[in-house]
Length: 279
Image (cartoon, rainbow, N blue to C red; front, side, top):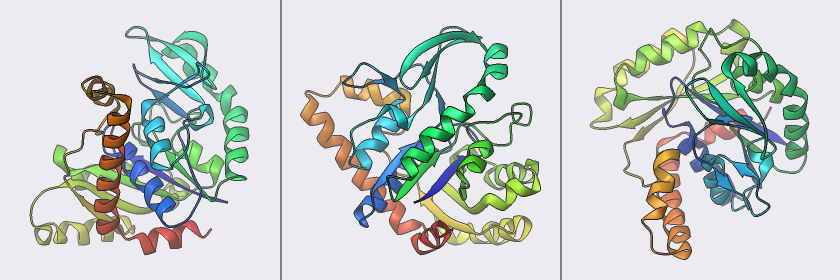
């Protein structure tokens, strides 16, 4: 029916966890929800019951959406085999091994498959929560993009742009990302989100006012820093290995997802998010 996309100013800005939280919030509010990331690069993966592989982030988002992990959630998975080569998984199956230049030329041929998969999902679920990759402002990689603004265009989806204040330079990263985009791409960004804030939010307000004035995009959420055992793909599986049983892992995932979803709901303007979804 509709979709919303989360892009980040950098890798590890908080895209995966914000998508996870939104999946849970929308489900709690009575909607059917499907997580989606057209392309992900990760050295680790989640193995489905049928042996196919998807990214661990989308498997976690499936838990948040109260669904079984599905290969359609991550149509393309790149698993690095060296500094310049990766295995290319399509619909969960290992199809190719390519170097970066080969894949850069090849990826545009995957657009029809991505769009067909997305349309199938969109026709079945109330809300598709789409995750971007890295930054949409990697201007050397924007040609034939299939995972950031290229995906937003295919899905005709509004975009939230998230930045991690813990890294420093949060306003510069938000402004720089927005300004490096084409005008039509900028129009897709409906809200800015500041992640991992620590301290008194009143000290941040002057910066929020200024970035809204400079970009003409509202800051729709400032999410406080929360310690989670589910913070990134690479730590997730290591954490799971230290748990005693599958039941304990699933219970603790639920606890962490619910905890973070509550924090996001309390610190993001969900009324505004729902207004953006009504396209």
